[in-house]
Length: 173
Image (cartoon, rainbow, N blue to C red; front, side, top):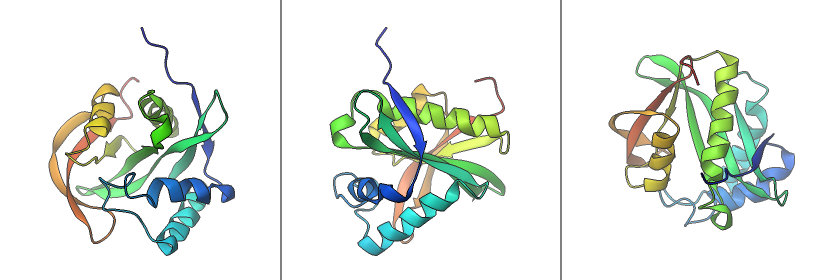
């Protein structure tokens, strides 16, 4: 059996804007997300990520490579109104130099465990683009149920075709 990626999650903090620029300001990294965000949007997102942990509506984390201590990406979950109920939505992103090592899956599993421990919302949804094979594979591997393809708006003003994956947080992990 392959050794699992060694990552730790740290709460998103004030000094993480350079990481966010690499994750959401790079055309290659945002290929399935409507393209890179402007500096203004990145600054807004940074503020949201810093605040989310203190609001009781989710958590955002920096993914850290345990071997080097370097920031490798982001993962989190946040409240979303979906199909007449409030659920958690999750998303993740890993820098190119850390991809292919299982870090996204391991970090997302840790975020799932955090959301499960809260016992606040029953369902966690992920909405990767139908064209994003690696993210869809992570959903499948982590036990999400594929519900349907759907139209999804992200970022605001950009519509894309996504898979709606759902995980029951109240089921045995």
